Image (cartoon, rainbow, N blue to C red; front, side, top):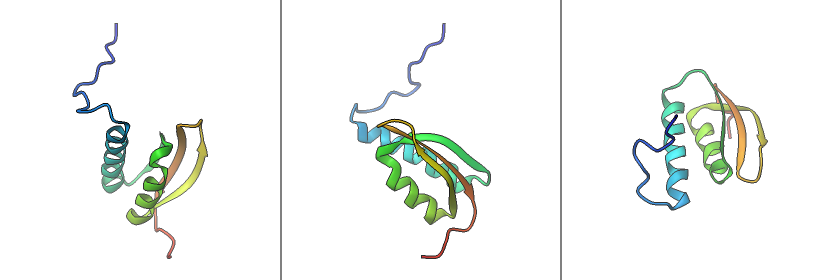
Length: 83
């Protein structure tokens, strides 16, 4: 029987902490990665994720809402358009 307990539980049950963890993991993946990213993310992080992508040279290929809390985003490493 699988155990779905966290290896290291969150220090707080504040949702902002979980958003920060999601953002931090994505930041590391984007900073070190060279391939595509295709995943679902919290909508509360959407603006931060799009800004991060543009700053680190990632291009959003496709983005769509999943429900009121999640969205799907597909990105590839490339040159960000000039602002």
